[in-house]
Image 1 (cartoon, rainbow, N blue to C red):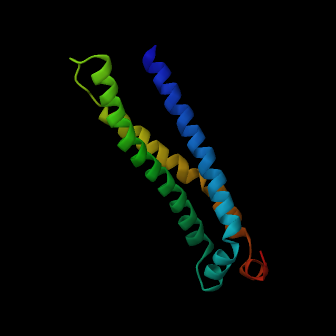
Image 2 (tube, helix red, strand yellow):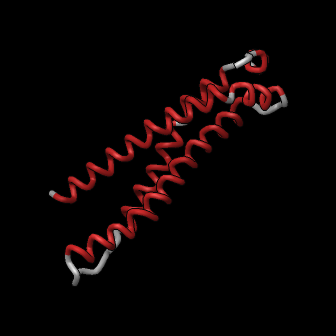
Length: 131
């Protein structure tokens, strides 16, 4: 029961992270339209630009996972120490690695749609915008 609740909370957290990364990457793609247009005009292909934006979104997930582990593990240790002093803290390493990898992959996937939109704009249109 408690494990199911914890898994549900983790899933909800990952979902919120993915939505946040999608919104952040979409805004980044809009704000950096001229930059992306310049890169395309200088010879960067659409696929390379799409991979760059997707990799950037994936790095958001990696950074979030690292910060989450850096803050979550000490708090879990503190909770075990406060709740039950004799119990050792056992980290489910395989599950943590799985969640970390899934978070990075899902945030990279969340960057695909904004990356696709960014590569559809022609370099001349992007460079001609005055925003």
